[in-house]
Length: 137
Image (tube, rainbow, N blue to C red):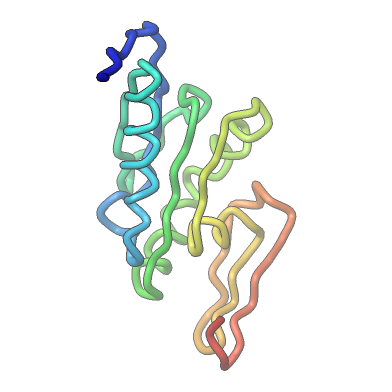
């Protein structure tokens, strides 16, 4: 027996931070899962990619996705996200939902210090920092 999906008229607006710069471990599957689960429930999704040198008002989103990145891409994101930091903090304070993985989580903190290389400044949305060791977990 097939079940028809009722359109609820609801739409979740998702801001996808650095979609081409991040997602080294197939993190984009999180977005696909969210979209599919919403479809099953008759909820629409509107996904807006947010790239380097774009600084939207992050409070306009219901959810912000921020995925993992390799070291070089993480450096680029760290530099760029400084321009987005105030708006991201404002979104967090207004209860916008964040789904952050790996580098995304790390850059929402104060900083990430790789085992080798310079410290990468974060946004301070989360009161944490991460420091890499010589063993990957």
